[in-house]
Length: 173
Image (cartoon, rainbow, N blue to C red):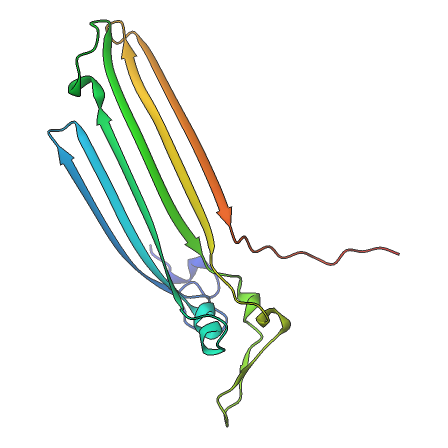
């Protein structure tokens, strides 16, 4: 049975404490002769916190775009390999994904109903950008000696930029 409240507070509501966002996603894949494939995607996100910062004049946009792309090729079907080399596939991909800032960065904001002015906590004294994770992967898959021996190799690298972390106060005497 589907329960819309199972995601926790704010998961399915648009109340003041939720961090709702909207997104548009586009994706495409092209293949050539069942040997080479290229994939691409683009995602545009709209985040609630960034709308408030835009209204305050701290940033110029409330939406951000992320992309991904990849390709793989069955090399053993594209070029002639020695007889003992049964299969070789190469793959490469890159993706970029984002994340909104924590709710605490704007949650204490209030609006003056007479002037429409927004005011908030001290966390509003910066111009935020979304957290962004970029991931790169490349590798090969291979089979040898009538498929009796296999070798896989993958290189994977991830970089996170603009990471927001909440630190507690340091105690001491």
